Image 1 (cartoon, rainbow, N blue to C red):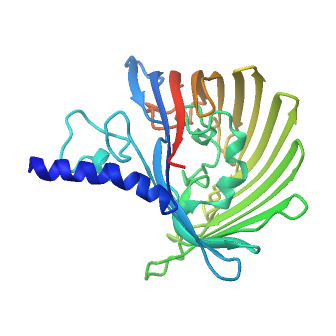
Image 2 (cartoon, rainbow, N blue to C red; image 1 turned 90 degrees about the vertical axis):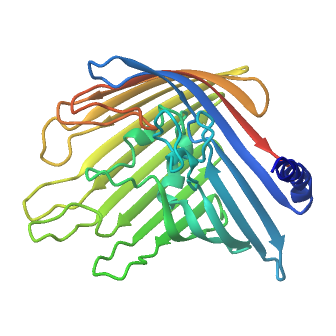
Length: 362
């Protein structure tokens, strides 16, 4: 057995440069943090080691005839705290069926690209998510705006990845770019649970404007007759840079459909952020406010986040941040990456110190 393990280890070491020579890139990002988190209840704080969407992936491409290129990518979460492949909720003492040992996919697809743009099929971020995700200075961390943004009253996550998706990304024409996606309905039933996602992006120097629209069919609330409604979302994002200062604004409306009981589920969310670079340091602030949904009372929340990044190299930086959510009495929004809000009206908060480092075989 020992000889077999040694042989496998040697084969793995040799295969990495061979993969690079064959045009396969091994890449990833380590985002590890130590966090002191309070879930807002009277049960004390928790000290945790988190991996914040850390990942490893393999991708490659092949030049074909007629200026056409075949592309592929396989990307998965990596848990540096448990050594697993994407399980987020892990108890002490790993078991054979532990979630930390199960592969959890990120953007994984095959496709083609050329002068017409890019088409792909697989498991991928929706165009709705792609339109504004880079406007968040705390992307992937505990202060990520997707704690509130992109989440409907029915808890459907519009700012997420979808499986069985066909997507298209156009080339840029005079600063304009279009993104479209369709998630197939692969079940043989009477529920049309497919989804459509569209986005448009315009860039001109320091200005970036983006808009997105998404419909998840029959994923909303149920009416009196048991029929599922459609869950929809619309967003407008504006980003602008002034010297070393970047400003971001996003306005979003989600709706889990109004059912026959007269329940209104429209929800409006606003996001503001600013970041400023000073030599090797970058300061960042963000503010989110979500109002009561429909004609309900005390179901809104606010989130405030502040942090500082310090670059150690082109690929590695360290950071410190603080984030806190203030929930109304009837709201239960939680911090990103499952920190565990206890109950309605509780106010989770977290202080985090971490490192972010990118790597690539090319």
